[in-house]
Length: 253
Image 1 (cartoon, rainbow, N blue to C red):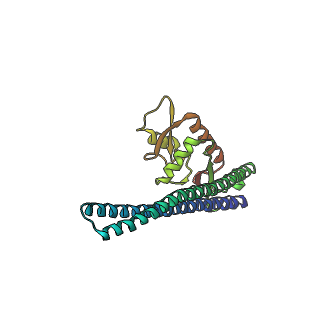
Image 2: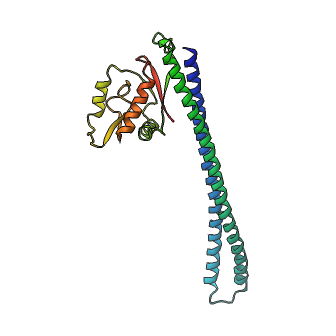
Image 3: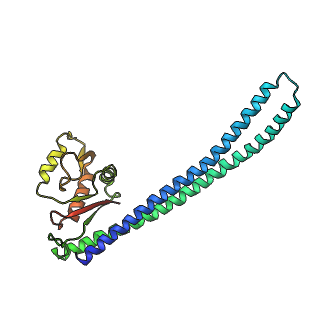
């Protein structure tokens, strides 16, 4: 493996770390929000219990002069006032805290996304250096090639195609695929056989027909033609000197 390919793989694994960080931030955001709402719900439940007790006392003593009931009602009335104040404070402050926390988590995720975008640009530049240097950077078979190649799909440039790939990968379609140009036409025909053409949209498949994992059973959706063809050109350009049989990771940013 060339030094450049070692760096590409290392940068890609750094992006994995950022992905993990984002998942942890989202998990923490959800847990804190749940805890805040749980406190508010607990106060609401306690207040509802006290309200019901007061109603029960009022109903049972409406025809009786019961000093104990009156005292209990007074005590519960004071408790209800305290709970009203607590509920107001916990709701207002709890929602404020949750909003602040969501904002902080969003900022953290945005920083991670920005970091991944810088890493992705670096990978694209390294791929360009590899290509401009000839085929030596992209070693072929015999166990001398890189662990895997990395291709970037930019969601800002190609939002519909990027979202399709991201969604397909999230439901079980592969992120790591095998480049096999020779039978791409056959796989494309198989993957699109049962999907009608559209006068407006392109049919986008994942995995793409250029990968051995594509073909029949691929995930196919309709996307904007300009978006789809732009993404396809970008992917093809990045892979233009990858040898067939290469293991390729298609990463959406």
